[in-house]
Image (cartoon, rainbow, N blue to C red; front, side, top):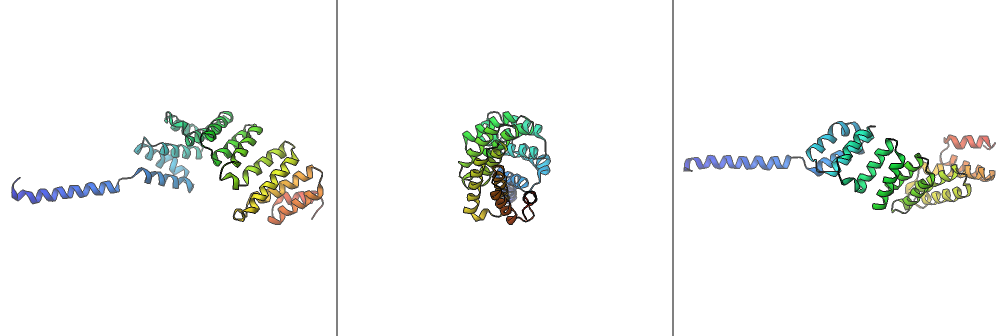
Length: 256
């Protein structure tokens, strides 16, 4: 290269290198796109995630399992489980991953296959014990009328680190026990619920606290202990004076 052209060549080379660096810095990254998609779902922008951002991110990063899972979740949240199932069907062997099993189960439940959904959720929990998976397992089993399995799922939720400090597993167990006329067992479960809530006041106020007192009122009333029933209905009203079921129960029992 002749000496007069060297400065021009050098300038063009530097410009090209600078453009390449800018393009690399400004190109979307997988983690950045996933973070943005998770944020859309967390903030309730389900339609935007399902119709625009989800398919765009999957097209940009077709090998990303999480991108497909987030897109499928968005489709499920906008009420399109069939489309969500199609997205998940493209995962090949990946559905054996716990997150994929969990979401596949929710899709099946939304399609009406509660038995198949419960099987997947049970498998997902056995692969990787998770509070959220166990709670969904219980809900799906309950929805399908499999009350024993639902209770087993809620008891499984209680064994997880998060579940040991949450009132919902024991409260749901109590609901099932009340439905089945197991009133003394329900009293025990409801007292456990109250213990969990009162041992960690950061959990209060909680709708579980009000309901636990109210359900204790129902259990005591069913057992013929009207004094205990009134006491617990009043406790529910003391937590929330506007809680209509407790107010109605007290009116029915002739108590202010």
